[in-house]
Image (cartoon, rainbow, N blue to C red; front, side, top):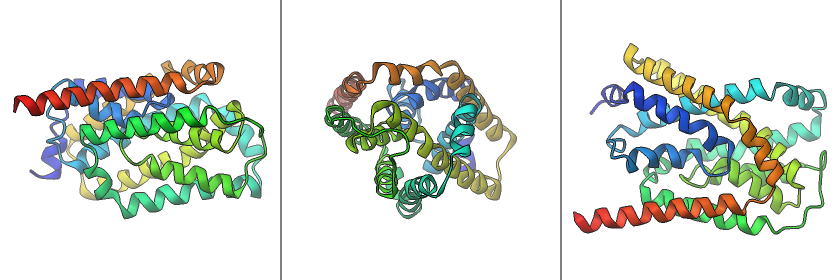
Length: 274
């Protein structure tokens, strides 16, 4: 099966549905990548039969829609950050970008091969356990306290989040809270370091698609998914405040474990019947 023919098998309605799933799951620490791979599997779609590069390009298109919506909705917050952007903050952002960029380029194919339902469920559980532990860490640090070491650890968290099910949002929140940042600042750091990585991935995959070429039907599927993700992210903006207001991460950890349990039970049932 060629890359192009594989990409053509993403129906428009399914592209739109996955775009609608992308928004809220990206804003909450529950792993949008896990939901984008597990929803088709649970619904019986032939998702895993699509070429891995085609699926990853579609997922990046969804992240592009989310990133655009976040830049629009958080434009004042981003402007405030840029106005106070100095060498210290530059080092935090740069060091948070390097580990996921290096890991993504070096281990891209191996990471894509991990996207099985069982592996994704394992990532959900591992992330949930880390979140629950970090949630109990004392909070002593606030705005302006982040330094180079914090940036590096946030970057390592983003690199770990390349594993399906771990969650970039969840991993960076966990890292920030483990570094004793208060929960408001942890949320701000999580969003700040995520945008460059998302935009970098969108740019890389976009360049590859442009080089390889896509048919109009493929382009429409990617566009529909991206626009739906943009709209669902706009509609879900209150979820950002929900995470900050409720503060505790344990409800999201519990949700992740529940989803993983459903997936593992379904996988076991499928194996038994085959």
